[in-house]
Image (cartoon, rainbow over all chains, first blue to last red; front, side, top):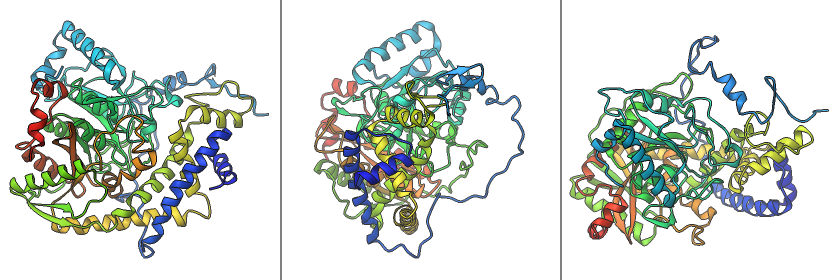
Length: 96
Length: 470
């Protein structure tokens, strides 16, 4: 993978990379991709892909608040983990 | 400080003095090992569950599994300051049974690695030889158990992350059937492959922790409670020509096969024709899922934030660059690439088809054998920063363990003694929900070998040699 491709991929992954990092990572990604090419050797065209090892129909539940359950008190402790807060709003740099 | 009788472990909670003595011992020993990221025996004192066999047993938890009151760092700078707002279902079930959660253990960042050296927070050393790694990614959990700091620890296993460190440290390591233990509260890395499991020096404790945690959970769509039929194991399959084993692991493998034969099992050579494609398929799928799962760390709601960023885009990109380590970035980039439009068919879909082929291999193999034996890892615990085994070669070495994750089947790593002064471990695999078969064989194998701890071995200088004589 050349560095240009790497930067395109990195931007899709919302990842900024320094030049040194990019150089090292492009070597490592290429090494893995070369190895992945081995997958071409095996004939699997007729097979269905496995996304999960067992398939079960969706389990549905009522769309209601789980009153009194262990998760209902979580909002505050989740907010405590925010890097910066104003009241109960999370602060980020100006969008515009 | 190995005193691993059940009686000892249950007595620690009896008085404040005993708890303090225990805490002081753990802190002293762990200075040399580095197993715990956080250790605090007072933070999650259990409500007594009288009559429950797990009541009062101290257990450590890998730091990618949520326990309210403790941090949830995932071994990453990205999450090093995050406090878990809730407790994983699996841990909650243990706490209801009276289990005492004493701390959080080190791991390769987000579970990505085979040495625990990819942790951004600290190093963990193998209690058998502190110049060597404890394995990974659940290296802190394995080291804590092997050093006698806890009788059991929870880990997670995406491609071998419980079994490989368990074998590196001479302990049991169970990766249960996919979905049998709820993943709610396990920080997601590769959702279709991973699960919570157990590392322990006791087979009966492993089993009882597993039985306590397994359940269908409304918070995890993929959790499923199914009892496998209890077929007694008569025939054990072995790989005819496992490639790439170190001479020591090869010796241990052959010796274990002979020992199982002597215990009365019929040994049958089998083939897994897809085995050579396991690693490319596994890393394609794992990286793809990782790139999606780790997209949530954006430096906004929690975790590391680059406070100097001037706009939201820069905030995300630079926070992620600063917060993630090299291996995590590699897998995110790889995963993003294989999922890019135009490449999906060639990589991701193809890998999933190979996964189907591997499952068929197993279906066929389990027609003729009740369980399958393989080495856990091609080498024993390697030295820190080993140039013999770089990160790429470590990935190739996941071939025996990652097969079970691709197929979703249960696998149990168990100690088979010592080679060249280091623990050697093998793994047994069974069809889905066939954990009982694994316990049954390992129970019987205890006639040949049971786990020991380094200080016990030191007081019996010939213990290691006794075990390595065929």
